[in-house]
Image (cartoon, rainbow, N blue to C red; front, side, top):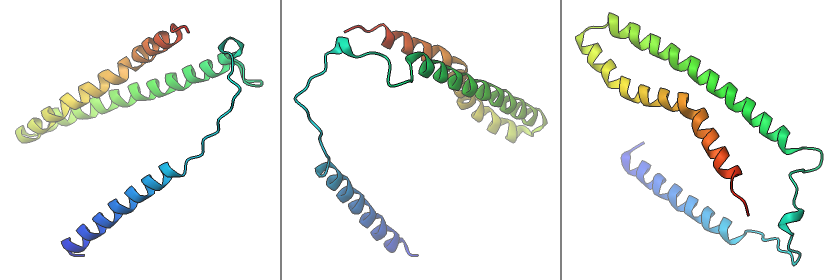
Length: 128
């Protein structure tokens, strides 16, 4: 395809997406009620599911994701280190460029549990 056809197709797609967005905002359904719930009557239970079940499930998911992320980051570090040791001078320069984004990503993975715990403590400490 030529560049002009691609540009025309891109413009048509952008206009189509914008039209869909406008149509979706105009066709939203609002369900309103006169009955205002009392916040003191709201409990942490929804049917048979309790808050503790949801919190424990979330903690398990975060633990699994963090463990997988740590293992993968260590494996990638080993691979980059071996390639760095075996590479030529030009390859070493390339690997040095990849170290900074890798270190930032690995630090975020290692610190994810701390960020999650701080956010959880912050939001559970808010009272009405």
